[in-house]
Image 1 (cartoon, rainbow, N blue to C red):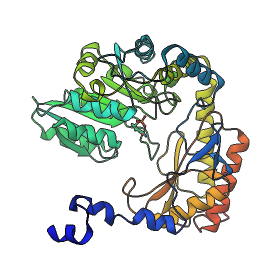
Image 2 (image 1 turned 90 degrees about the vertical axis):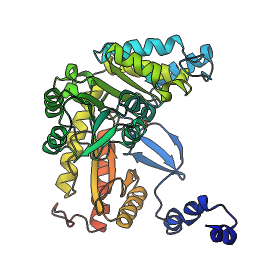
Image 3 (image 1 turned 90 degrees about the horizontal axis):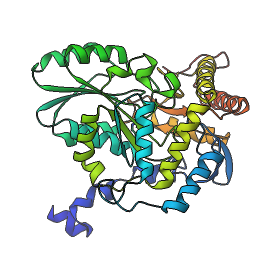
Length: 412
Ligand code: PMP
């Protein structure tokens, strides 16, 4: 240790950072697809590096981030409340707007009560780590979002991870635990990389059989799927069987923040005990007003959800017909599997140059050899946008030898 310090003039704690050269190397090769600054956007088109490209990689599912009504709602409340709350909900940071939003979301989600957090990430990290403690066992899907994983770690509860969407494996793990111990099953409602729905009916059945609580992170499901956009449990008519459902405002709700709904006692416990809630400043007024307006628009304009479903089905069908592997997608998140990491970055770059922005997703976020570009759609994409996206995929897919002219996949 002493040697390293003498040689390098930095503390050995920083060695890992100085040794981390992968991002620089990829940047030098001209293939780095991350942290690209958007210079302007109208939602469906973004300007990056002076070039207008179609956005096919945003979570702006309802297309509300640039809607004149959400913009106006945000502007108006800044006049009344200012730009920030400068304190946590517990102390000086509660506005009447926060209470109004909690009430409206509880009502929308047909649950007793709601608590807001300042990000979706904090919602899951802060709720899971608070509701489960060292005496409990958490059963967590292996593909759950990072904020759930961190929440399980912070909780001090024993955590067992079941194979992705594998209900037999979950049953085996549930059977192994002491029947008297507190248990909670946690899953994404829609998995963020694959766009696959969780097996809610089976999860409800297992939770019931083993007397476990059920927690669903519906970040990519509320305002996207289910009756009126009520999320994954609503797809199966099972909302009343899920004790806790979380959502985020950074996707369909065109803002930033998150929420948890459930029974009043549980929500009040989390409100008073979760460090992520108590020790972090509350959502700024403009963010809250945007969500209130988005929720209103979601309910007034059902065409948005219909259009979203229609175009997701269209894109899944057409990408498959071109020969692409869209994995197990069932929602507006449609991944396209490319293969190894560098091929994925090359594909991404050519697609960008063909006028389409997507997200490159590489291991460890996905299994090795399954690097993919994640596409996602919004209600405001026009047919013309979609056809341009498909044409770019066809051209780049042929160039990279991923598909052939007959719509066959050329990769495993
Ligand atoms: N859960 C899931 C499944 C997500 O995909 C995300 C964000 N991508 C989050 C939670 C965190 O939400 P936010 O970005 O709003 O903090």
